[in-house]
Length: 102
Image (cartoon, rainbow, N blue to C red; front, side, top):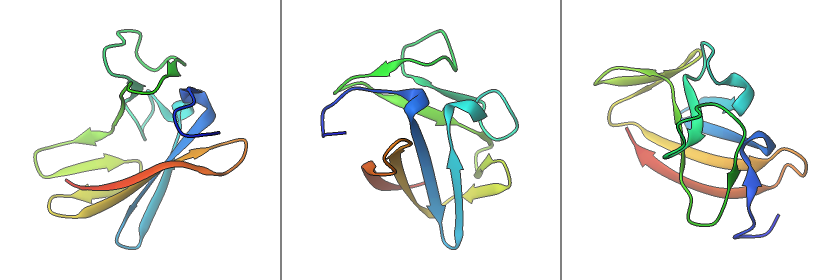
């Protein structure tokens, strides 16, 4: 996979890390207890596989409140730095990475 190449949501894993906690999420988790939505922004056909092109945006939504977000047993709390990685399932190579504060 090269930068700017399109990818299918089903072909990636999103890894979230906060402090000593790590969880891996994929499209297969969508609609279950770990992830409510794993979909492209603007796509009303939630949780179905779609191609993400350069410039597109997708999101993952867990269970949440105004002070925390839960993905399975991992609970992310306000003012915590979360590091994310998008990993190609076939090659195990990182496509993109970054961080944010909840």
